[in-house]
Image (cartoon, rainbow, N blue to C red; front, top):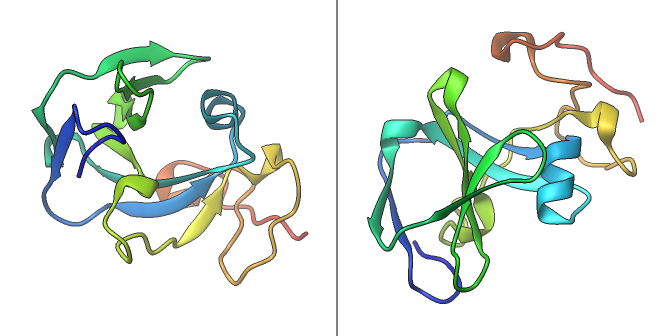
Length: 133
């Protein structure tokens, strides 16, 4: 798996902890998008095997990107020992979203069959409160 220009390659091991769409202000600002598709792994399961990513902080979260092409590679969730990988970099068919998080910040309602959490599920430290569009 690599950035758009191929200068940085990542290797993933094991299974993701969660695959989700995030609607938080931080993700939206960093990506210039209404929401972000992410696949979250233990930090030790995401290894940079070629090149050197450049850190950038748009609001609060450190994100790693390719300096040459600008591709967002992953975000550091250091307090939880996780890395949130840009799901658009995964091989086709490997992103299987389970839920939406931080929907309190959503730009527009998203209508699908996934649960939509106001913040995060209670298992992930959130309220567990669902948003009813």
